Length: 190
Image (cartoon, rainbow, N blue to C red; front, top):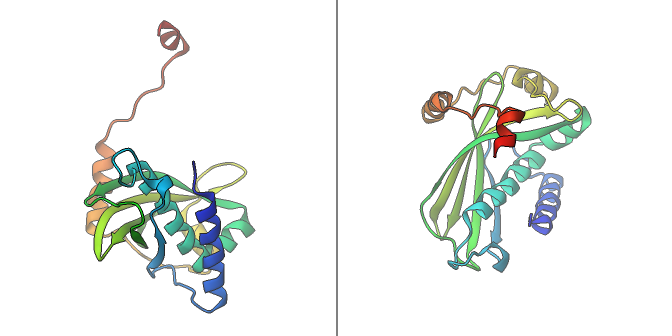
């Protein structure tokens, strides 16, 4: 189940920090903190890999709120979609561990925003994800060009080419085959 309570807490905390003047620039790093709960733990008594990806949503939510991007997205009828990710897991996260999630932008190109997120426990990175995200129009679902998004949020001309390791991932991802659609006839055979 999606962590709606933590999601709500993240929104409230982000808004409170923004009100207190703890806003972030789009190029800053967001940090949020919470404890691993029993609902995060799987049958191996560690945080489930899928849950880790879900909790990274909270870090992106905090960055979006504290930069003021969230308010501008709502004003324009836009949302954010994840269009790709690559994750590395290095250390286990156990029940009740105090977790820090750090979120930062690592590149912007004509269509996508690239976000690096890391999860930390006791000063050690436990996992890291690279996210390719796009801003979409709620009505059409289409991805909006990043220059239009940057203009709308008052950051016209911001240039943030993807870091070298991000660019390598972008190029490698282009080589990856994607399944072709299956015809109705082929589907009915199974």
